[in-house]
Each structure stands twice: as C-alpha cells, then as structure tokens.
Image 1: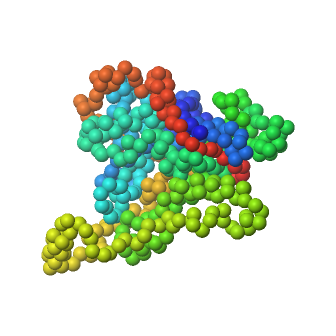
Image 2: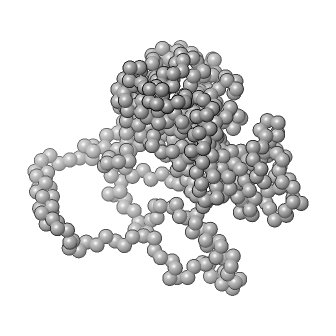
Image 3: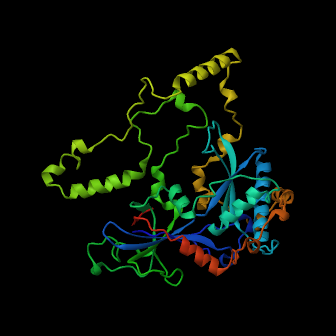
Length: 430
C-alpha cells in the first residue's frame, strides 16, 4: 500500500522560487512550500520514500477582460495583491506585511467548462497557493464577492490537493510512479545486502546522491529519493484531445474501438506480466498470456437505432420536428455564430499544458534590474481590490485556529493521509 502525505517545508533547490515578483529572496525568508511524500516499493521489493517537489494547489476563475498582454498582466497582479490581502484579513494577519504571501503564482490559461454544453475556449486565471489549507477559505471569499468586489465562481476548488496532483500527472493507485530523474538521500543500500535489488551503492552514481547534511533522511525506507514533478514520466502518456474548441468531432469522428479511459491500463499490464511469468516457455511464444475468450472488447456496441420504448417518445419527436422546422425558416446559422476566436488565443496555454507552468524553465524570478519603466508602470496600475466588510474571520466562524499555526498543519496532515494501493518506480537517466 502506498500512502501519499503532504508536508510544508522551507524551499530547497528542488522547489521553484515563488512568488516570482519577490525577487532573489533567501530561501529561509520565502513562504513554505508543499512537498508530497509517496511511500511504495520498486519491482524488486525495495521500500521507497519519494519526496515530490513542485506541485502546488490551484483553482481557476474566469476572466472576461481584454486579451491585451499588458492589461492581462495588470489584472493578474491586481488579483494576486487582492487575494493575498483578503486571505490575510480573513486569518487576522497583517495584510501589509511584505512576507505575508498566500498566492504562489497566477497564470493565464484557456479551457472549456466541464459542466453544461460549451463550444469554444474561455479564458481563466489559474491561481496557485502555497498552502492547500487555504483553498477552501479562498473559494469562500471568491463566492462571497470579497475579492475584486464582485462574485467570482471558482473552478476545481473542490478537488483535494493530492487527488489534483495525481490527476495532473496521470497517477493511479496500484500503479507505478515513473521518473526520468531521481536524486537519492544518503545512506544508500549496499550491494552485499541483497544482490537481487536493482538500486544499491554499485548501481547508483555518486553524483546522484545528496549530501546528508543538506537534505537528511526522514524515513526508514531502503531508498529515499527526491523527484521534481517535471521528471514524472506518467504524464507523457496522456495526450491532449482538442475537441471542444470547435466542431471537429463532426468532421473527424473517433474510431469505434478508440479507448479513452486508460486508468486500468497499468493493472492490465501488471496482470499480463504476472501471467507470462507463470507460463511454460513453449506457451510464452504465443505473444499473449490471455485466452481468446478472456479478451473481451473494451468498446461499447454501436447504439441501437431501432424503435425505442419510451412512453412519450412520439410526443417528444413531434416537438423536436416542430422546433427544427421553425429554425429552418429563419437565418441559416454559420460556424462563427458558435465559435469566436481571438488573435491572442493561439499564444495562451490550455488547461492541460498549464500543468507545466511552474517547471523551472517556464518561470523567471524578477531580478532588481528587471524592474524597468514598463514593469514599474504595471505595478503602479495594480492595486488591492477587496471588500473587507464581506470577510469573515475564523473566530467568527467558530474555528479556533489560524492558517499559519503548527497545529493546523499537523491536523491537516493527519486528515490528508490517504491509503491507496500503489508503488513507486525510480528510474535513472536524464
């Protein structure tokens, strides 16, 4: 069984420097960042504790303003200042203290709402927070109209942080977490301890072992590794399907045997390996460990088009035909009636590709020399836009804790310990 756990810690060399507009601040003066600890085993049975860095909780809010890059940047900065201010007031902190940061980063993305029928991209601000504990509080402030002085509908704020991370990186229980690059914490196992194990002092290069004084071990597992989210291979197995930005499905229908729910693929492969290991050498040459009758089609049968058995079917079909006849008498709709595109749309990341927002190569920390005339003008246009009269503090709601207290973090960690079946597979290489 694998148990992912959440902790917050001082940023290390594995964590992005956030917020980017804070400049080159020493790590011990930056806000604590979340680290996910995943416990599992390798294929040869070695116990592993993996510290996963770079995953931050987030939610979306819709943006309906101008797509001019300068105006978008000003809106992002205003939103960041407003969210930090509102959360600080909510937790009875000094909202004007420079070190008081709740928002890790905000990016501009495009996507299609999940609920309802929508065609064409809409634009959203993706708000990353430092602490998952603040997510519910932020969602409440947005719905109450305290931030930006208007009601804002949050999207995906109901997802738990660990579930959100697993969805973004295509991770499942009873499956392996595959990484292209891992760094080991000393000490590492010796080869003489168990020659059947893959990872030991003879197979792990010294350059891949961390100094014990910098990042000491925190578990009793055989292996303890540090992983950055950008090195998780599982995510590359998911490909984007841009089918809702227009009517592409009408012109390019999917193949009937196309499988779109790959969550059981790992279980299928593991069972196939187990069965092959028990086959005789002569049977293994057949190429499959399953009998023909066991290979049931994963695709649904074509929809039946015969007469239906609905009670009011004839009545409904008559009404549908009447609506169709009425629409045919009016102006013929065109493609642009349903899908409106903008000149900046192609330059904006989709919700799926925005998972890479906080990868080291995609964020740039503001240096003192970066605060030129344009940046100073942008900062001057940004302002705090908060209705403090709508903010309710934890004491008023009956809570006995504050967001930054250690007891809150401890209680939250206890609640977030979720048991899932799974393993972790470290892979060397770049």
